Length: 183
Image 1: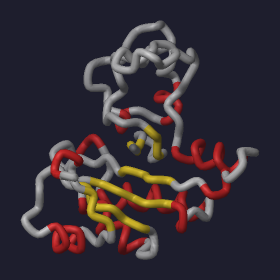
Image 2: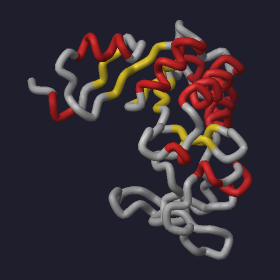
Image 3: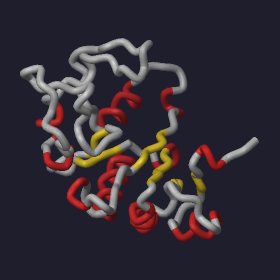
């Protein structure tokens, strides 16, 4: 899951806001309510410790104090520098977390797609990346920039014609909501 900072740095974080349950500032206080990552620079985002509190939804998780929200570039660099077997074969499923109902929470779709694709190309990961989004405008923009990168159309509502909806999103992968599936 990706978001974009005020200074147009792509960060890896599920929510568009800094998580109030898990993250703390330098004074050990939770972030302000609805503190959008888009309103903060990367440096400001990095000032939050998001690992010192174990997630209550995952009781087996261990707290790792000092854990920062990573940039997408840091994730790519981590894998690139890894000595682990098969690190050079890791695949990346990158969700562009864009919400048309909150236009100030992320850049325009074409900018969001471009920022991610620039990083993908910088690390020569075009063949190892799938871009996915519920906001199909970002997938259409990604297709215009880098048509060979795999795109997956996510759906929150069941389309009447899944194939047509997927192709309209300029995607080759249909990603349905898991509860729509049966054996």
